[in-house]
Length: 74
Image (tube, rainbow, N blue to C red; front, side, top):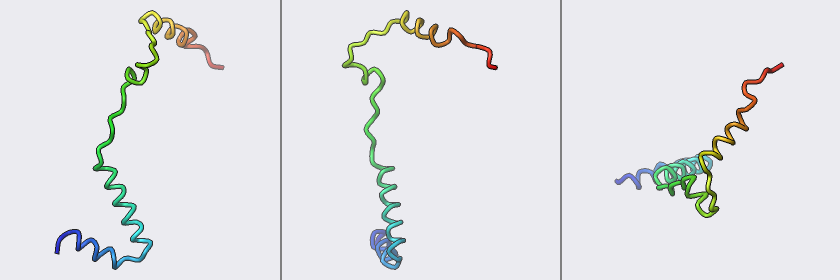
């Protein structure tokens, strides 16, 4: 008897609600072994926007964001 036959034999002995749990578990296992498509990097996501951010732009944004830090909390 191979593994597939043994699993099927055990599965048939289970009540329907437990069979559903087995099915859910096999779906979970299948998702774990299925290769996932790699995520696109931030440069790839913004490539078609034709945005050119300079170091000066970043410095200015930091100054705006952190300009009032630390402030007193009452």
